[in-house]
Image (cartoon, rainbow, N blue to C red; front, side, top):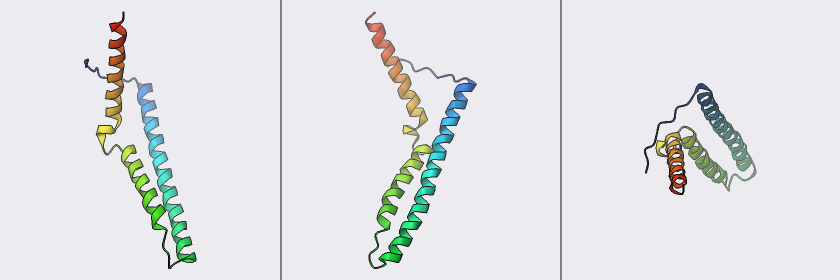
Length: 105
């Protein structure tokens, strides 16, 4: 594997990266808000229509699992698969492509 060089971002690049990050955070909060509101409605419907048969916890549990995974990804709780990992992988693939191109010239 070749030497991976540090990417230098100009102000426009930094702005676009920050904007993309804010959009991801906004998307997460939209998902979280929907999760809360819809599940409150589902709990009400379940308790009102069939209090002897509780089913509201299934969508609460599975959608909740999805919200947690979404949050972990957006807030980069596991940095090995976060932005740094993406950048390293991009650099690695670019280096590999460059080496393959030079091999045939």
